[in-house]
Length: 149
Length: 177
View 1 (spheres, rainbow over the protein chains, first blue to last red):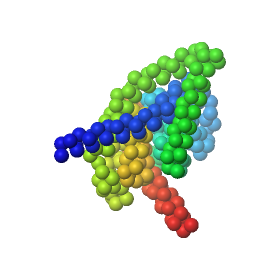
View 2 (view 1 turned 135 degrees about the vertical axis):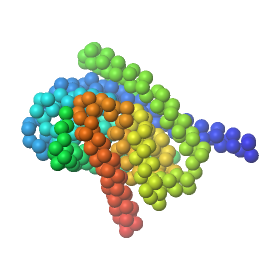
View 3 (view 1 turned 180 degrees about the horizontal axis):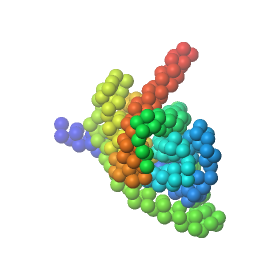
View 4 (view 1 turned 60 degrees about the vertical axis):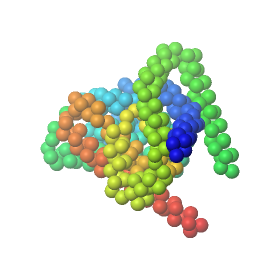
């Protein structure tokens, strides 16, 4: 019985190692891609995109958040700066939410490992949900008369 | 046929990797400063990711050893009910690191019966990072942070439900044909 358990643990280790090795090129490649995207997309250009319309700015906020990568703290810093420059809270909230829930740069890895259908439906849903989350959050804040900064 | 598909997928992954590596090193010829900035960022990600990758690997071994497809289906499968949603939400919130590091574990769990809807809910709740909450409070107010997090948890379930609706629709269409 003990020998059987050892073999099963060895098998679990071997199976997991093979699985992870199979995914190594796509994961390592994604880390490289994320590093390149971080340097190629200047964060200072974000504020130039917003035009002052609630609906289009929310859409743009979600779009920019979707293609952005990096630590979420960066999105809070950029979000804070955008608010100081007069960009609406809905747009900034959509931007922050999409930053972490939608992953355009990670699409190749997610498609490769979790499947095309799941990846596309999940990311498209998360994109639009980020706008709805922003609208609902700001609505609640306004209804309660809360200060958001 | 399955083996041919897997080999083809594996080859594509290596082609993708090769393409990205070549593109990465091409930055030296485009703009040296961009290359060094990317390299710096890459090294920093690797440093932060290596331990999480180890944790993911250990979790994969544990999953393969302790959790049979029957057990995974019970807690994360079709009839897992509220506990499935709760597990997905809590696991998403407490997991750390970039999402792509968790793909291998999610793949294993799905192979053993985890629903796509719970996978989507887990991935959405990864947006809620407890260690970063103080930073959010610094740039916005605590009230904003609290409301946003609550709304995100609710919509993580809605996201999962939308995935489930699509899954069921595609399944029904396939059954009809």
